[in-house]
Image 1 (tube, rainbow, N blue to C red):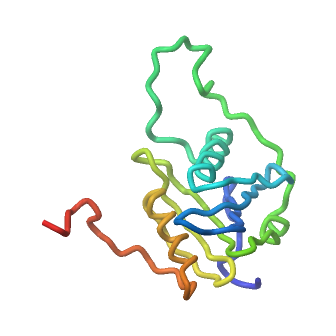
Image 2: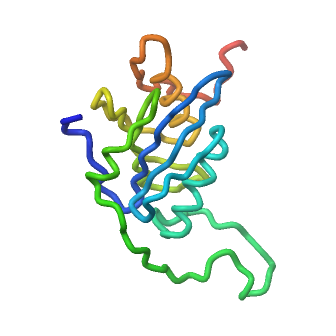
Image 3: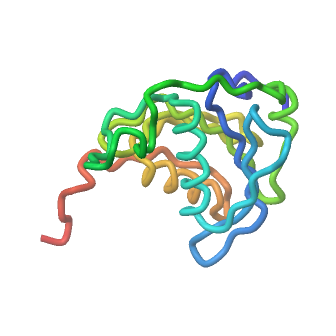
Length: 165
């Protein structure tokens, strides 16, 4: 796996190991540098949940849209103080993790408009593409899992337009 795109490069970089795929969903393991233990997930919702939880714990990338609440100050989800987490895995150790079907390196750069923006790398192909939303990231992952295994850049510039009209 020697390649120019194979790096973590950010405090919140995640290696996603896809071990099983089928019926439009996948399962596998997540790895990040703050734990040696894999985080198993089933389904895209589980994967997104664990990644969002990590980003919240790191407060990176900082969320641009906060949840509104009328709760007491002490019961809020975030205290406003970032707690430093200790790194226990090196980038090299993270990059040595592989899924049975596919391996992705995800670097979320922004959490804006209630979604994520960042870059995703197909580890086996050393190819990196950007994504503008969680939905687009999932689409890119699914395209890498197709029969020919070639990831395609998302090219729908106006996904909100109804093409059947």
